[in-house]
Length: 325
Image 1 (cartoon, rainbow, N blue to C red):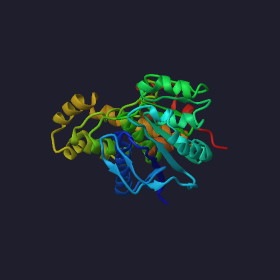
Image 2 (cartoon, one colour; image 1 turned 90 degrees about the horizontal axis):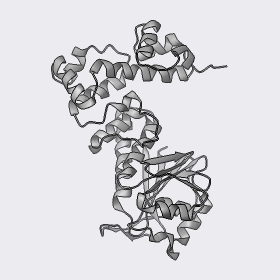
Image 3 (cartoon, rainbow, N blue to C red; image 1 turned 60 degrees about the vertical axis):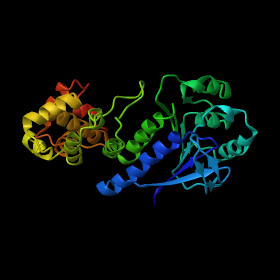
Image 4 (cartoon, one colour; image 1 turned 180 degrees about the vertical axis):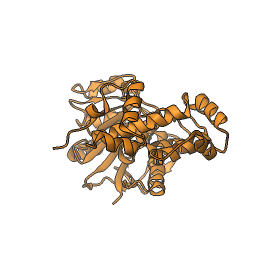
């Protein structure tokens, strides 16, 4: 069954707040099907308190779905912003606030994501109390006033607190969508969506370091993406430089130059990073060091340990293994 995602649109909604994330989710569904990832595709809904609204650039939106009175388990609600913070004072928002307070998104089984001043609507419904959150820098004071029990964080692209995700808005909504896609369907799907959108993958300043599957994909070079897609799908296969160069329809020397220029690393170093990331996730799932080495494409446990040490990772592969009772 597809994952249900409900974008809640208000009058004068900022179009990029919802169009960017919605397009990312649409493309993710295509990639999930194409790659056979096994994750649920996304089914998008656009709902509102009224069946019609006007977007920030004057576009007329019609046939919006009514606000759902019940949602399937695992659904997402996305609250988007308006061109001003005026919704914090408008009586017409009472229906939305009451609906949100009743559904209480952000609890297990019902995820809440806000874009830009959509966080103000969540704040009015009491959904950000005792949580960390952010919003567009122009609305930080409004958020602090509306949700005095919320820890408002500045200078963040997005913030996650449990099942509540808040973003700074506008293009930051795309960053949040890419993060949610990676969490739901895997980093390869998110990377390919970012490539199609022609945007680099970014992260907030307080977010954990991106995995090697994403960290060297902040570029728009189609030939490198082709190589990185193929390797990410089958990292345990044999990947000599010549094979990677053939995929990019270039020479090994030129491929190395392109990697240095666009990805800031070498093909071999990037491949080792991908394999290390896969080995660590396999170990954390409870596999043995031998099984993790094999799954990630290392020739032996010793090669994995040497790569682990050379990368400066703390501890050892055996220490990273989750103990399974």
